[in-house]
Length: 238
Image (cartoon, rainbow, N blue to C red; front, side):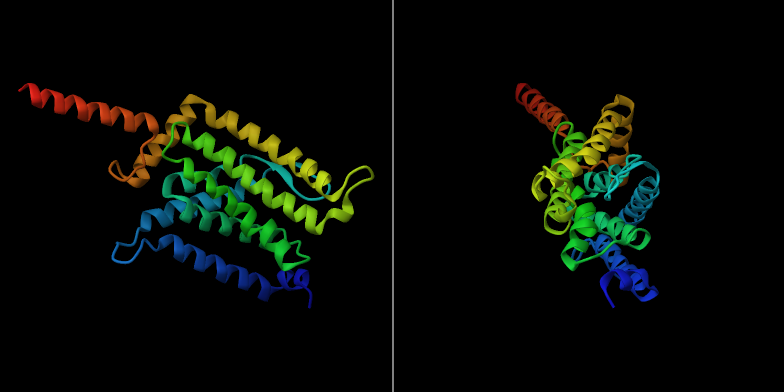
């Protein structure tokens, strides 16, 4: 039995579901001695579900795989933005594995990893910008670049034979994957740059983490430092 047949089978799909359950367990785990954060799990699950739904809303399907969807990468980046890279990575891998159930195309174990859990999980690396000014937009762009790298590697290693005349495996993979990821990325950045949308996600970040736990942006840090210095100065004058 080859890999494609296995993941098309019931046992293959059940195996993927079991891995997804384990990944959600990792999301739920807060660390030794820390309380279980059920809110984090619930919000992460909602974002995973949203990513799956949006991933099915295909605007344009590429002839050799890949597609432009309706902002389907945004929820994974949001999960990393809200809860950090580790949990965002687990959520992204869940999305990739669920996509494997719906749209399996597997020719090699490494290709499976690059095109499914690693590609979607890589979006979570955008969470490293969560505490910076305009961190969501910067993180989204960085996350898309990370996913793009996975797609290019998969294309070069496993799909180079499909490169048309005049292209090498590398140049074709670089160009082909750029055409759809860059378009969806640009559309999503425009959405995230809308002031009302940006403010809504900032409020959600505070609500899901709590005022004391939410990672502040650069502006918030500066404001708080200024308030602290002002308070110290007032105390000195008194």
